[in-house]
Image (cartoon, rainbow, N blue to C red; front, side):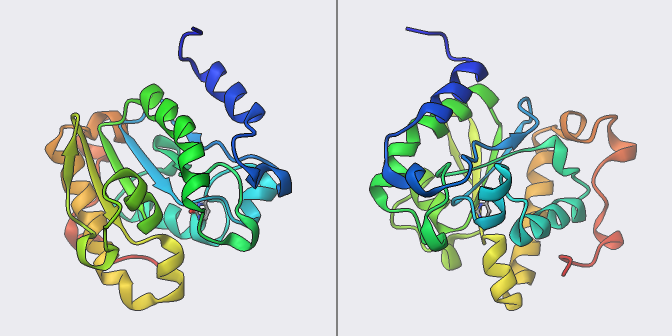
Length: 211
Ligand code: URA
């Protein structure tokens, strides 16, 4: 068997025909970011802009995600970002269970290669496939679970925040909880480069999520 490498992952995604989603796309969207990051963010699936560019979270939801990360002092290029499915579902519908299951092989390989210490699950599709098929995001967001040494937390998908701004205070609580978890696990230096002096901003300096 071939050793598991990023080259194998890239080839496997490029050649994948495990479900029909790839028949109607412009580009596959494997995911991108710092492949050595201790923090991985997982969304649902590419939207239109992502399909056009072949990059995850670059449309309006992605731009909000970038600002959310920056609000806790995290440069987006220091984290790894991907989705449950690597091909855009038509009309941005939720991926069907068999599509998400077919794509699991890619996400598994990706998680194996990045070896994150913390995973944030963006929205209920990611939370269902990675944490608990019965999860209710409104009730269980912000709760940390440890699995095989990896800390995972579900939170609202940034698209949900764009649709309903009243969810933003809870999302901000989750971002602060993420910052606290990274601090607790001693991941400052990995994520912020040179340590305390360039670390996450403190409570007083940032009053909430950006618009
Ligand atoms: N929504 C997602 O779940 N992922 C993306 O990459 C873009 C929008």
